[in-house]
Image 1: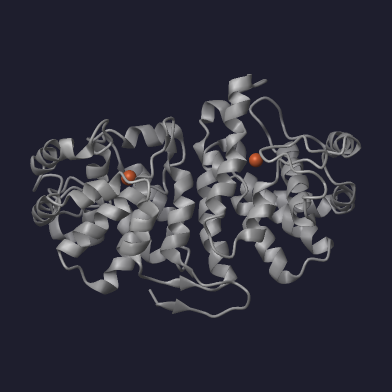
Image 2 (image 1 turned 180 degrees about the vertical axis):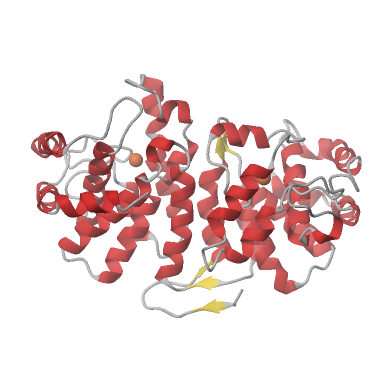
Length: 413
Ligand SMILES: [Fe+2]
Ligand SMILES: [Fe+2]
Ligand SMILES: [Fe+2]
């Protein structure tokens, strides 16, 4: 990977690892809340890489791969499977991750590493690889990943070091590269590794340890990375398989009609792709539940825009994108969530996103109904204008461009 890629206008330089570290937080929620699995794996990788004096040119590929190694996992069921130390069939999510990444120029170098991140040292892998033929970064991530699974323990992590180490040693030369196991045995003596891993300030340790790799200064690359995350979000359910893309396309169409510059339209596209980032934390049983949700389930759903907001606020230069993305369930009358903003707080961009999101949700199939025809969409959205939930002018803009919006939907497979 190049160290500096393309210089563009108003975007502050963003380290790729920082962008991935923030966005991957969305993948780290399971039923027990935020686990920070990807960040923890990247941190263990950094200790291992230091111990084996890994080629500095390879570090960024290792760290960035570690930060999204489970990109092929979207549902709670898939995540729960990976929490078992001995996974029965891990390769499906490796292949899915590879397929997501290999086409995207800035992330393509990570694809092969991710494809092999569960390959066993002794072979028996669908990839056909064994031993040192498995990419070194994949071997490091595999070991770090399994250490992290063992490290989710109650109490003082230092009390569990020996037990974790003996589980790893028992699989040296079978699952894991023996030299890496030896290296890990040496670094595991450092209390700092375990304390960094369980620290509330892991972000600070990561910045200190991962400071390397490509810097993004180009909007197209941001779009590329955002598309991957949109796919991870939309893979959660067959009913939302194109939701993020449709919201992004519709919002960009409306932004163009509302006179946004090309630069702003591209930012709107990114905001649309990422608006439901926080949905990765919601169980599919709730997202796909036919019929009404109970109060607890509604409260779970309400967390998703808060999480989107938290994550996007970690990315420099994303302030406006964050407002457009994370306020899509706010309403002009103050009855939305999670901030209960009112018309004076909601910019045109945020209003556009709300309209694009509602339109997309109404025209898409849901487990309990087919996508709605135009007259019903019209009726529902007009009622929302009357109750001051959504913006009248933006809604009119959508209705004036309805056929174009439908064509956008038909173009997404
Ligand atoms: Fe994995
Ligand atoms: Fe993992
Ligand atoms: Fe949403």
